[in-house]
Image 1 (cartoon, rainbow, N blue to C red):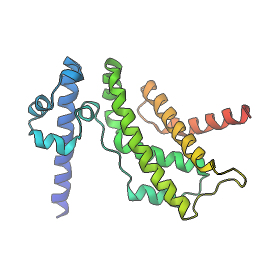
Image 2 (image 1 turned 180 degrees about the horizontal axis):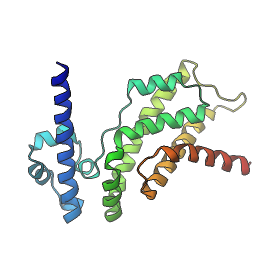
Image 3 (image 1 turned 135 degrees about the vertical axis):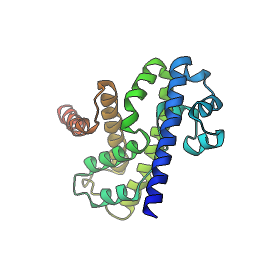
Length: 203
């Protein structure tokens, strides 16, 4: 049974990659606006129905992106984390962003966005999905008394924490995207430290 499951997962991965590579090649040649789902499916050797089983919209196939997900294991790590509140919320953001922006397709994503900046609009939509998932998880944590904010921080401190953590995550991903680096990891801690320094020096 385990072997069948493994083979099924492998087949799903291969189909996803075939559709993405077909979409990327067609969009690179003629522009994403001129490419149709039918053309992508034909080039990938799949049906139109199969295409939509893997990608909700054409732009996701071109970019090599996925629908954002909140893995229960990620939520558990968030609950168990002993880091300060800002750091653990940033790491929660990063974990969810990684589900929709796979690092293995980052290089091609950079290339196609450089040629067709209008594709950034789809990234913005995906990041909005990420924010919704993270906000729900953090609110649930707060409702259970699991968030520790400074006394006297005010009624809006919780929302400010979410906004700051989201801003840090977006900034780190932006630096990672522009750098062409293979891994996002070095940018996370650096960006948290940078934001802390900016806050301290502008008080």
